[in-house]
Amino acid sequence: MEQQRPIIYLLADQSKYLLGLSTLPELDTKYYLQQGVIEQDFKLFLLTEELDWGVGEYLYQKITTAQERRGANFDSRLVAGGLFNLLLDFDPLTKVVEDKKAEIAEELQQFKLVTKVTKEEVARQEILATSFPRPVEFYQVYRLVAGQKLYYSEIRQVVRKNKLVVRDLSKVLLYLKLLGRLEIISAIKYRSSSISCQRCGSQQVVEIECGYCESLDYHCQDCLMMGEARLCRPLYRIPAMETESELKFIEPELEFELTALQQDVSDQLVKFTQQNYQQALVWAVCGAGKTEVTFAVIAKLLNQGRQVLFAIPRRDVVVELAERLREAFPEISIKALYGGSEERYQQAELVIATTHQVLRYYQAFDLIILDEMDAFPYQGSEILKRVLQEARKDDGQIIYMTATPGPEEFAELEEGRSKLIKLSARYHGYPLPEPELLTAELKYDQEEGVVELAQLVLDKLWLSVEGDGAQVFLFVPSRDLVDLVVDYLRVQFPEINGVSWVQGSHSQDQRREEKREGFLAGDYPILVSTTIMERGVTVEKANVLVLFADWEYVFNHQTLIQMAGRSGRSLTYPEGRVWFIGNEISEEMELARDMICELNQDAREKGHLKKH
Image (tube, rainbow, N blue to C red; front, side, top):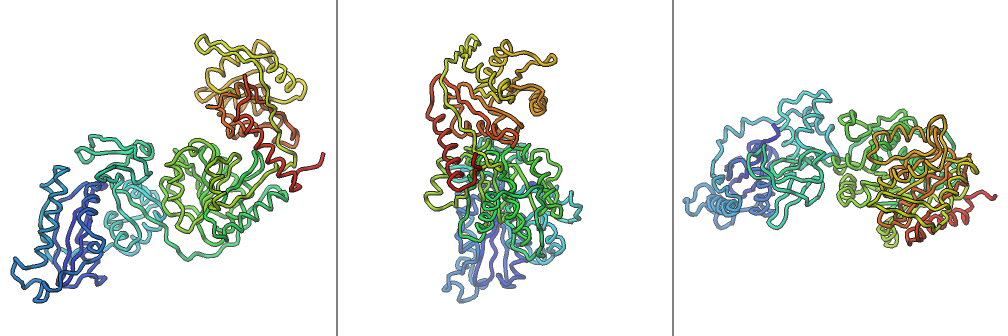
């Protein structure tokens, strides 16, 4: 049952006492007896009735010292005559019990739970009759859940899906806690000054009437879709322990040979794992083949029996990448985690996951590779950044990969906290298409729903389609503009077999995938889109045109670089063309162009570009 609730107890022998928080104090007591923490002449008192986890955790921290949680000695003057032979008024055990009861009562007044205070002594025979779980049970359960942070219901599902037979799962988990293999904490942490989620770290916690504990409660809004974090709900944090594992001899199987630059970056990543850096930044141009340069470092860690996570913000990329990694590592068990994934409960040596799914991991991985760190929803999310750090082991490392580093990444490089590795050229050895910044009169009346484009825009489109024989990604900053620009251009351009040259799509378009596949197949030449097409779409021969590129609140330099990266990706048409067109030229447009030019210059100076 998930709603087992904890009790604060006091356990003592003739010379010392300790205070604990447990759903089964009898099990704790028997364990401490077995370990010699408490002598045989012990007494066990329950100081509270069952409490909600958040209240119990808060109260336990408030009324105990670190020494009392481990075992504190009574005053030696008071125990000289024997703890249990003194008169009641001078009995140090009684004094400690009464003092702690008073502290508990005072703290519980704010929760209107003073009636939860008690002083119940547990019979010795009841404690001695308590049994430990079988070793095979707690070993198998731990093996399944190590490196994760889960609710009881999730652990129960893992156990069931893996067809384990466990007589008392709650007792097994409590015993693992006593062994130091996991922590049991409240999902929502209550402090006198603040309330926060211990699962994702958010403080977006709201008050609710809870149907589980049937009282006033709190839950977290930011990780609600991954299961409700409540004040009354326990969360199990299970760091992965170092274990001896059989050495492997895995070589990734590549469909092509790495370029000299890709091989150099691959070698640098392998060396990085032997250095003192906690993180590395791979600054890779769009279309550089950065995924493949990670295969050697993944193989190295897997060969050592270590744990690797490949994280990406977007679900569709997780699915695609899982297939590529299964082809490259056919001998390795791999699971892909995203919303609705059927592989969630499987065991695997290599994990590929969306950044949201990383929320369930805790001190699990020796190496984390995060691709597209500049993409939504990871970009700008302090929660997902914190989640990624929590999934790393204390001595683990993170490789960040992006085409568009931001100020935070550059600051970390300047401070020496991150190692920079540049992948500044595409596999075909041609420079990145450098954007041409143009001004033109672009009229848009939002209230009237009218748009009018300058002849310059039409000229660039005709040049692309008729002159270059290329398709065009035409990006606009809003969904409304997609429809308006499509209608405007359809008057200017013909149809092919009854299908207009111009199609449009955005995040709310029900036919988005159909239009995407049609564009990839070459069914029509011009696709008008919002930024949803800035990633993960590669067309053999494509130019890029960004309209209203001076709308800085939509088109920052990182977004502009990603959109420009749709052009010149293939050996068939490596040059490509990119135009940023606005009513004026913004600083972000200039910065995007300058960063692209800087990468080209870096690649040119290092001899990674072909001489034409």
